[in-house]
Image (cartoon, rainbow, N blue to C red; front, side, top):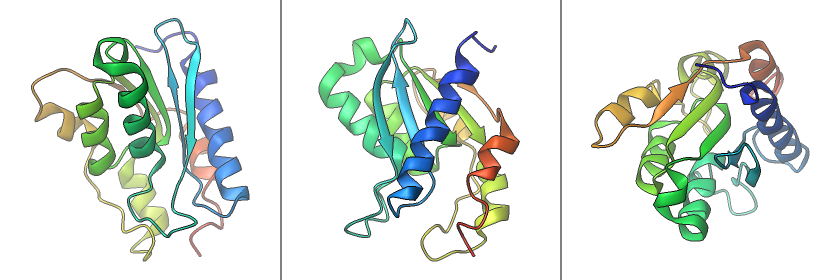
Length: 158
């Protein structure tokens, strides 16, 4: 179910993705919102400067949030992601204790854009499947605002 601020907060993750791309990274962004909708943290893609293939915005944010806030608070928080978290990121979200995820376009749609790009060999595995294998529930809303999410990647993978 869509909460009143889900679309505006998801669009904020799109803004983070745009800033990441403007800085030379891939166009991905994530934000963490507390139980009241207050933005607690933002994270763009972290591929550069070291060419870290695991530098996905969601994974980095989940790690930072786990250290700063702990699982008790994170259970009531939402991670907003410009695109569906990959299997690696879904695992990090699960282990951090974040209780809810809202995302733009699906991994399947992203794969149709990136193909087998060397810097983003997309896994076509829904985050819901990763979360379903766990022992605690992670609520998922998405895909949402797909066209806006997709537009972030125009020309980025050519």
